[in-house]
Amino acid sequence: MNSRNVLQPEIDWLAGMSTIISAYEEIAASRMQKIRNKVLNNRTFLNGLNEVYNQVKLSYLAKGHHKDELVMKKNGKTLAVMMSANTGLYGDIVQKTLDLFVGDLEKNKTDVAIVGRLGKALFEQRTGGKFPFTYFDLPDSAVSYDEFRKIVDFIVNYQRSVIYHGVFRSIITQEAIATNISGNEIIKEAAAGDSHPWLFEPSLEEILIFFETEIFSSLFVHTIHESQLAKYAARMVTLDQADDNIKKSITKLRLESQRFKHRQNNRKMLGTLSGLPLVQLR
Image 1 (cartoon, rainbow, N blue to C red):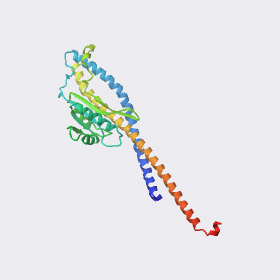
Image 2: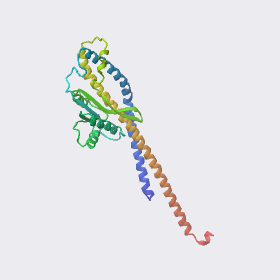
Image 3: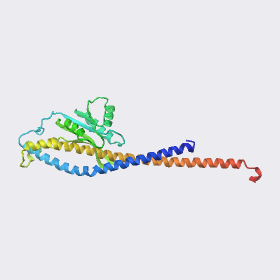
Image 4: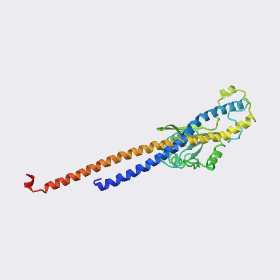
């Protein structure tokens, strides 16, 4: 860059980008705040719900059933589902989820499902078609019932379903985790004798069916919200870093513009002085 006429348009362009990024950051912050309290409160609720499910399953085991035997008939397979995104600007949380997902697939043979266009593209690039998979499209923000139901109806047929997704720890920390939403890892063989006598109304089997359908859906919805919260937080951090880098670049360009202006002024002064008559210089 050797001209102020080149520097100023770039400064103006970067200033415009900073405004756009700030707007996106505010949108991400608004969406994150909207679901943050809901997700954090639901964690406690679902932990309690799992404890109840545990007691129901223990009672079912006490009647002589096997720990993997559910009231509803399953296909006996395990499904690994990766929750990703349709667009970018989510920092490294999608990549972290992919790393965990592919790492487990290398160790365990399971059926595979991918949710989100970005995850699909990254997974195909990473594995080169090594793992066949089922793909589902799901919006990054508003999710319709039909879109959600299509995924649930597919997942519910599996004996064991593990969802790989981002989880919010703090504004600057998001992790990738694997969550089993089938309930069949809650139970351990040794726990079968720990069940307490419960009175089930209308029946133990009907209550267990409720857990294996409605509660299953609730657990999956929670993983979607966890994933969204982690992505919005990651986007805020990414956009904040980008805005900070832009502002540093603008400061650098303005300093360069000032130096260029000073060099021009110095050359003009030297030109003026060099053109003065010798007698005037004395």
